[in-house]
Amino acid sequence: MPVDKFGRIIRDAKRTVVQETTASDLSVTEMNDHFVRRDGSNTVFGSINMMGNTLTNVSNPASDHDVANKAYVDENARGDDDKLSKAGDTMEGDLNMGGNRITGLNTSIPLSSNDAVSWLRVVQLVRDSVRETETKVSKSGDVVSGDLLFSAIGDDNRIIGCNDLNTNRSFSVLLGTSTNKLYFMYFPQQPVTLETEHVVKIGNDDVCQLGTANDTPEIVFHKVRRMNSNAITNLPIPMLPHEAASKLYVDGSARKVLNGYIPPLRSQGSRNNIKAGFIATTNSQLGPNYKASNAFNSYYIGPGPGGEWASNGERRNFWMQITCPDMVRVWKVVLRGRETNTQRIYRWKIEGSTDRENYTTLYEPPDPTPLGNTVKQSVIDTRDKFNHFRLFCIQAEGSNPGLSYMQLFIYSD
Image (cartoon, rainbow, N blue to C red; front, side, top):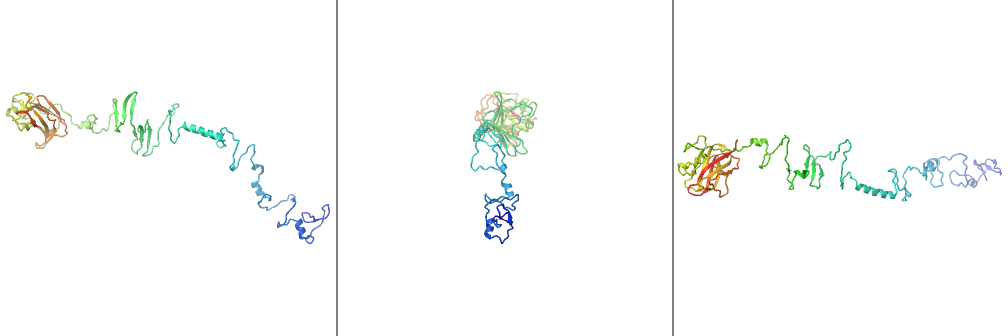
């Protein structure tokens, strides 16, 4: 029994409503066959024309053929706007390829850093990068296999080096090997240290050498140093003869006096000259004509009396001494044996004393060193001062060995 959408019975072929339907006119079966139940217990088997009306409070669809509400459609079904155009488009999210490939990419260089790259181009870029890396210096450290030149074209100065050296850190410039280098170490309150082991040359000539092969920390100069009226300061006390000395050392150092210190001790024949304070003594004397003072009679030398000091038959452990009026430091002693060149003293030494009891050996030559009739000069190396100096004769020859001349050379104060 057909009804319209309001439940009224249609009796004739023209679908004219004959009467209103009442509950008593319909059975349950007729209602299930012709009406859509609100509880959803029966099924629509035809199309429903909503005539411009809406279905409200529709839930989100759970299966493919469920009715969708507007919110679901707006969120999930945007029509053509949700699809990529073959002519080109822009993605608004990630595109998961699910393990599939993107093929047909252009093999040329990408126009921007965000463009997709073909495998062929990637391989070529990697190879180019390797070649470029091999020919460029890395900022993090590298080895240059060729010349590295800096252009001076332009107005800016060129700087190479390090300007942020931290405390107790070093900066090195290797010059050939790890030991030949310019080495800079920074310590607070101290200048930067320059360490190298190289020879500085001009042309083919060595100028100076910084360091030596045996690691001696010194600068070796091979050319004359012209100070151009400037000074060399802070010199230490010289220890070797060729070392430079400071003004303080020179001013405070004694100078060698080149004239003999002891004046003639004999005048007017046989009289002793003791007014100057010099006294000559001995422990053995061949009579009054062979006194010790004769050896200091510089203006007379002769084989006879008055010109020599001779011992009285002594050959071992005898001496001749000169006492000075002041404490002096001696740098040289001059001796001459007897004029006959016989009766020579051949083992001897020079001694100094301040009290005539305790003597210090100042010079002892090799044995034998005979004192003949030629002058023998002996350099004394001492920094001590004495006022008693004696020739101690250890061994001699003949019956009356002695001297014809003795002189002391001293340092000035």
